[in-house]
Amino acid sequence: MVFFSFRQVKLFLFIAFLGNTFLHMAQSVIRGPYLQSPTDNSIVIKWRTDVNTQSKVSFGTNLNDLSQTVLLTNSTKEHAVLLPNLLPSTVYYYSVGNSTTSFTVPSLKYRFKTNPIPGTAVPTRVWATGDFGKGNTEQVAVKNAYMNHDDSLETDVWIWLGDNVYNDGKDEEYQTKLFELNGFSNVFSWLPFWPSPGNHDYNTVWDQIHF
Image 1 (cartoon, rainbow, N blue to C red):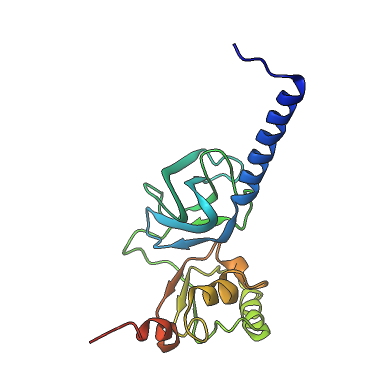
Image 2: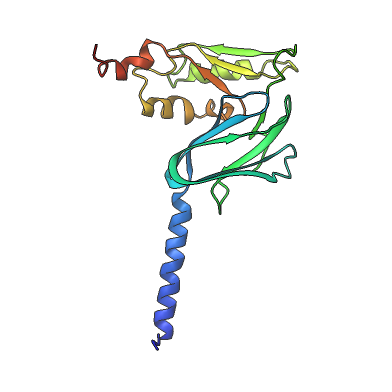
């Protein structure tokens, strides 16, 4: 039988406490969450974390009752969770995290609306932007002017027309000029987008293409 002194036990507990604290501090979202591939009965929620961890989305039609969950147990930094079997034309609220921790607090900004059943005629608003990802004040001003327009019809679709970030379409440019840009990035958590690449988005990969 092994005996430990009171001082040793305190030291072990302190080390365990520090390890648990640093672990939770490390697990944070550094991109997103953002919405992709919406349909009338499904959507994909994506985000990036600073360390590898599991992927969990809690969701529901009541902001105070996110009782439905999808958990992926593989450990990754690039999270993509498909939510299936949703109701059409319905607003859902969600939070993202892992099996033990929620990285986002439920609020109105973490929401999405499923598409109507194909063939159903409904009013639809589309926001189309191109040559916009420069990370400057004008980019934020255009977004704010659009979002502050006084109209009861909320935007359903956001189309990117190309040259979405300058100058080279690098991942770090998407990070700093879109996903992290203060005053601009708050649309990603509730508005799905459909990107189309332009020549600037291809700059980085063009030299790697051999014919």
